[in-house]
Length: 276
Image (cartoon, rainbow, N blue to C red):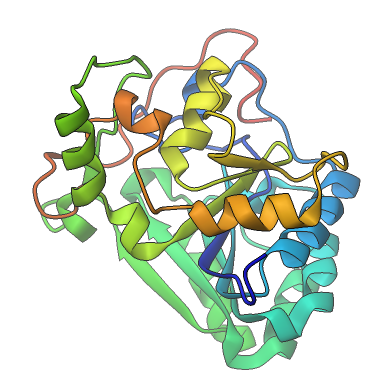
């Protein structure tokens, strides 16, 4: 068992429901047949198990979907704060369609500089951008607005990871995909559906198509038949070599991947509950 296991970023996908329906959503929101909020009880278990496996993470990021849709986000954050000695910062990433409740803003303010917001500005879609920013200013909460519309989009727009299909890459091509990928460099650990994934596309592949990584490439946080030592051993191997999802990916290459305008919206099907 490793003496100390750290993750740079704990991306906690507390919901796969969203107020938007973006074609190139990294979390596969439009393609998820069963979008849902993580049950509070399961979220608590995921947090507890994450911090049993990983000794420390630089940042816990509450993300989605749209995390502010989750009816128990306040309680989930309060539970996370019980592990304050195991993380450096907290963050909420939002699409600026929802203004947080005052209780949540009070909690964020009480945390001081180690709790911030990333506010993604999607132009006409971010209908509550101004009132959200005004609230953050009012409460003195650190935030950053990232612009994803018009000519000067952050990162020049979005990347298209793939269409959730195996591209039949050779071993050499898969290695190239991995070596150029930003995920291993940033050590993201993505948690949703009771599982910890080493990259967001591996998670999205599961959510959209039910395709799990190979054994040893993800951790089932809720499986008590797997020992802590085994889970930590798997965590040690995160982002060290190509995984199954690499065969389905066009590349998360910050330097060379083609960029697309962010947040192109797809029409929702009648009865689609993704935004509820």
